[in-house]
Image (tube, rainbow, N blue to C red):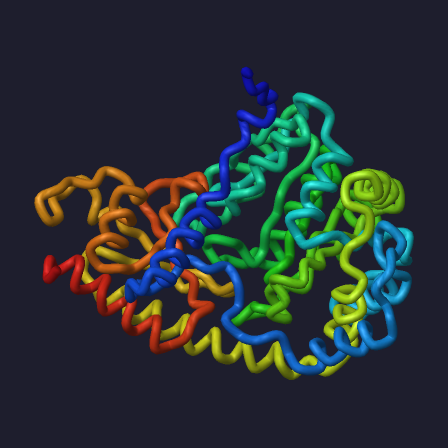
Length: 398
């Protein structure tokens, strides 16, 4: 019997970061002493007050269906968060709670994209953005950036990328994979361009609590017009070490929110009721755990940046947020290592994994070649051991 697969499904590529993480975990399970820099999740436990809120929710039988777009309690907590953090006023009609940030983004593209609509995605980009756009019938349009400009585009480059088919711009700050953060001045210029051309700005600020220099600014704060065009995506995973709880949320104008809610009601119904109750505590309860994690990430980042830039053949810029280093490996490409010549970051990473037992994420999946992403959401001991192995690999000591 012939199996039929749709052309739309065939066009979707698997997530390279999840595939690599699965390979790393299998090697660990097999007893191989591999060091992993691939994980995009905090290595901290979910804070105790959040876990206790979940237990209480179970004891109180908060285990039934909730409204498809989230409970009123959690929506109110999210509105309070936007008011406290950014001075933005939203009502519960503007909020949609989903099964994680990925689900929120999928809802967005489904709600705003017609077939053939273009969505501008600055590169390097998080690996799932283009595939989500394609799933919704849209066309990803890449806006390339350079390391010399801290992997950030200029207002002129953005304006040159806009056509009559442009529906939205994806703006991820702090960025995965580069860790770079857009300044308030740059965001205001981007806001003016979006209003001028009447395009949505999908503001992915999932790492907003992990900013190490300066402050995070939401683009919706630059006036009512840009607020109406901004669809903010956030969630509980990164700031509160709640990756497995699967709670994301969006804030947008009421029409977009209603469309997303309708889509979600038929696709998944409501997010997990227990995780929603725990998320209320996360947003409104004690925030000291966030500060503890942030301070530890700063120590790890600073060590990694100094160490990487001390090793011949590799280099990196100092990121201002998230928990990633985007390492330049261009000097290692096109030359012989251990009897082989590697012409791409992917080929190099495969050999480093096999020979040095270090799992890295090559940059091709992020829309650029010649770089490797390392996560410092892992212990300092692991970081030191992994970088020792990378240095030995480069020095041909394996």
